Length: 201
Picture (cartoon, rainbow, N blue to C red):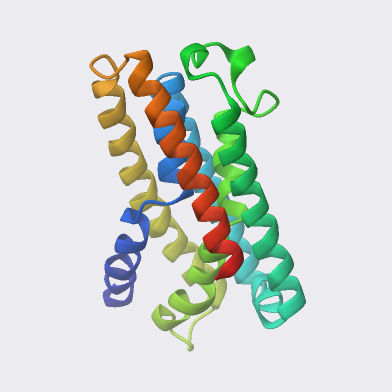
């Protein structure tokens, strides 16, 4: 139990730090409704399950030990974030509520949250650098990682859910086209910056 509490305390600041999921929730709720934000949170949770599963069977460790494989994952994640940012900037904020105008026409919010997390090497690194510090080597690793993953998901989804409700509640007040235009530019720029930071990390 002490190890679990320690992991939660260590992972909480990581979850609270604005990143791709935070930015996606903001953009999707402003463009649609709170359901879109919750779908991003669900996609993020699924992505964390993928990382935890890979860590449990050792595949993530293999990727992290291979410079070429890690670089490929990092650059794929960076390219995806930059694409999201550019697509957002090229969208028409005044028509943001129209599904045909969304910059990611072929993908729903769940898929966006899932891909944004799966392609994020920082999420994988949580289970390769942070989680091992909270494992008991005398017990099976997979069940322990599963417990840590549940705790990680609980923290991440709670935070994204709170932020979804916050943005949704303020949506009526900030629904002016000018504000949407500014937010579109900000979220697009943030995604591009996150992609560049990921590529250079």
